[in-house]
View 1: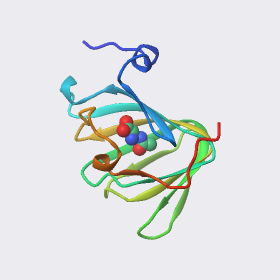
View 2 (view 1 turned 180 degrees about the vertical axis):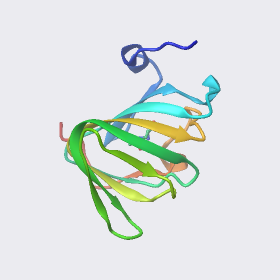
View 3 (view 1 turned 90 degrees about the vertical axis):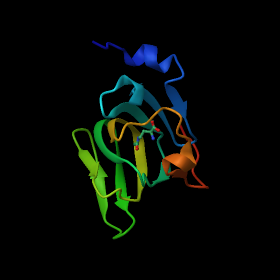
View 4 (view 1 turned 120 degrees about the vertical axis):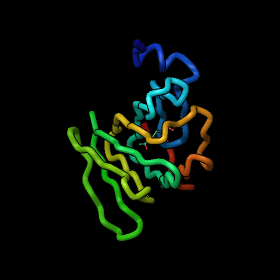
Length: 132
Ligand code: 9YT
């Protein structure tokens, strides 16, 4: 049995941050669950370019508002509490937060915890800045 709280995970190296988001990696590969589980905050007023070429990801919105744009076809999908989006095609996308988004994310295969933006396929837009 594994039991962890968001608070204790945020107070450890499980919390990673970029200019446009931070993420608490509550479950990782070495937990041997076959997936990883993250609570991520996307900062208000930001846009993040994301392309997980080697991972499938599902993202459930807990709080906030924003949108996702898939780059291959330019489609835009609103994100609000209760929305689940699923990157089942390793979809390259822009993630925009109008109000700070809090989302729960699951990755298959699991992240190891060592990923940095480039290896992870996460490329913060050059002009994005935290505004909150
Ligand atoms: C929104 C999103 O893609 N979150 C993923 C988790 C985060 N990129 C991490 O933990 O590296």
